[in-house]
Structures are given as structure tokens and as C-alpha cells.
Image 1 (cartoon, rainbow, N blue to C red):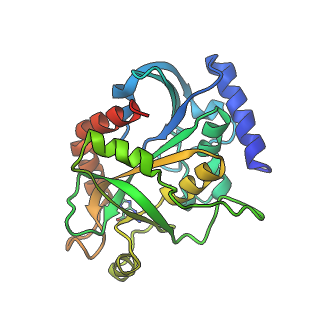
Image 2: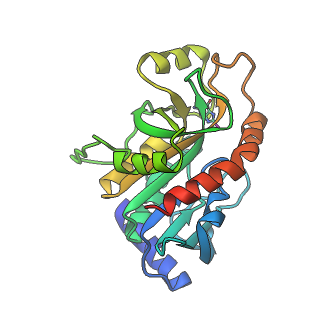
Length: 265
Ligand code: 8IG
């Protein structure tokens, strides 16, 4: 991973060779619970294994890299669906975390849609609820950028696209996403800190990706599925199983919601 941009351009070239598709209009990274959204959004034009494309890592969990799909949306636009997210906690460094986003940019995507499963700090929320990301606080002490790259992050999570999302579902709430490095969940004291500095959502993925996307010139849209209330907000211990169950329960509803939103982009 010498030069992230050159690596992304090489990966983009490989995707074009494998699919015959030169460019896309937007890209989606679908996190826990969100996977079905792509199927509802349009017709699949191509589906390749990310292991055939340079720069994507095998996940430690399953030994698989996941899929890269290109969808023809009902709107007529094309979307790259990046099913191969690398988290900071996997230890491959920030360049690997940013790779999917930079490949999307290299494929011509103008909009980056980032979704995740996350913990909710806001006490009004319940597990299984989707929320819009309005801003973030990056507590990872990392950046995907190097050198004197002073990227403006005002309106990072596009207010234009959040408005479109609210037209689809006016009941959507929004909040500030706080990224921790993970992979452990927070202590209740850390959740109280996140709350007192203005956080509503705790997660392990999206802030770093959003910075990379903005630096690459893309408009960013982010949504979290609240799969659990954050440690100490809910009184019972957090479990990965509860996260998976909440994702499964919410999947049909949030897939339809996201499919409707991306077709308006
Ligand atoms: I799903 O409670 C999911 N991801 N940091 N905290 C953090 N990440 C998460 C959580 C959570 N739930």
C-alpha cells in the first residue's frame, strides 16, 4: 500500500476489465443490517469477488473478502456496492480502511453512501431504528489523509441528501456519530463522555471513511442502524448476537428505505 490513490486507480481498472463497466455514479458501503438494500434498489449488472481486485483484505472472521457489485438503479444511475469493508481494528492500517472509498472515487462515483450498525446513546432511540448521521467526532486518533491536506469537513454529511432522505421518511431522527477504534465496545464511562461531548451514536467504521470520501471530492451520506443501545445506556451487557438479531429484524424496512433514498440521488 504505497500510494493509496494509485492503488485505487489500479483496482478501478481491474473492476472495469472484469465487468466491462467503465464508471459508476455513486457507491454504497452496506454495513450490518443493510445488505438487502442493494437488491431492492435495482438490477445487478456485475458481481465479482473482491479478492480478484487489488487492495481488498480478507476479513479475519470468515476468510472471505466479500463482493463488489454494480447495480443499475431504477433511477437509471449506476451504483458500486462495496461489500468488502475493512475496519481500523483489523490492523491493516487506515489506507486499507479508505480503499473501498478511494476505489469508488476512482470509478467516478460522485456520491458515497456509508451505512453501519452502531450503538445508540440517545435515550429516545430503540434497537432496530435507522438514523441519519449529521456529523461525526473522530476519536480514533487516525486520519486517512497524509501530509498537508487540510480538507474542509463542514457539511461533511451532505445536508442536501439528508433533506432528500427526510422526504422519503420524515420520521427519521439524526445524530452525531462518534467513532471509537474498537474492537471492544465502550465502557459506560466512555459512553457518558461521548454523550457529554455531543455524541448520539457510537461506532467503529464510518468517520474515517467519510473523511477519505470528502477528500476524494465525493458528497457523503451516512446512516446508522441502531442495533443496540450503548454500554450503560442499556442495562444489560452488549452481545454480538443481539446486534445480528436487531439487524435481521430491521433489514426489510431499512433496505426499502435506503433503496428509495438512493433512487433519488
Ligand atoms: I453494531 O455499541 C455496534 N457497533 N463503538 N459501540 C461501538 N460500535 C458498535 C456498537 C457499540 N454497536
